[in-house]
Amino acid sequence: MTTSVVKYIGNLRTEAVHLQSGNKLITDAPKDNHGKGEAFSPTDLLATSLGCCMITIMGIAAMDHNFIFEGGSVEITKIMAANPRRVIEIIAEVQMPKINFSEQQKRILEHAALNCPVAKSLNPEIKQSVTFRY
Image (cartoon, rainbow, N blue to C red):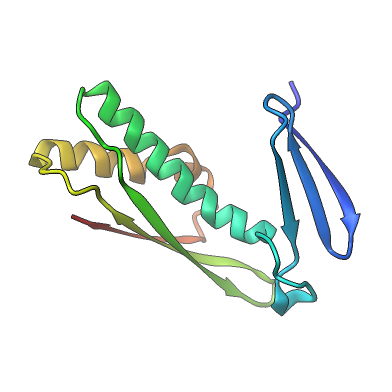
């Protein structure tokens, strides 16, 4: 089954439609690559998807182990390289919720984040620098 349809709408913008939900997403080329930078760029989405995946899988792990995780967040920084233009590093700073997690729960959550599907799908040449802040 097709996941999404992406249309070029002009001026270096795309519109992606998630077919199952109908949700729409706009991308724009970044300012440093001929765009206006008025929306996520495709490489922003790549980096951001790592954070979304990490925190989602952490939520699943907490649910599977019967503890609360609500309130966590991830700050993502994308580092680009040239020749060829590509993402070379994604810095993810995970802000843990203000919950008194046990050491076991911390291990469960950190393992979940570091082994999420996006983390395992990225090219190994993309450095993933992850910090957990409790």
